[in-house]
Length: 135
Image (cartoon, rainbow, N blue to C red; front, side):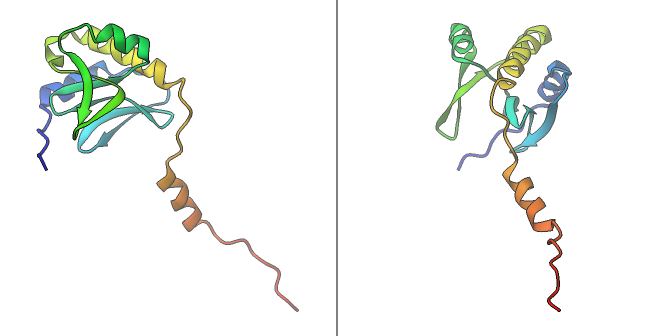
């Protein structure tokens, strides 16, 4: 299996600078790359030297006309709602930030995702209910 290229510090800094500062936005690592989530749904991230954004069909179609915006393909699989900016450092921070805001707005319309691992962990650590002893 191909090793992923580590994202450059410049790209990670640009990603962080462009990330919307909105309530509910959570930045965390996914496969060693910075990503951003809202309501448990990823809406933007970095993969290798690309910035990816999650968009509705109409916005993806508009963006697909740009030469460095491609469908996001990882490990041979096309992630159907995501577009990858192939050369994001050549775009202005304002432009990347604007696309991230559109991705955030779209992700906010999606159903809330519950972290299954977290829910299972809570069930395991919960104290059992006390039962009345037989007399």
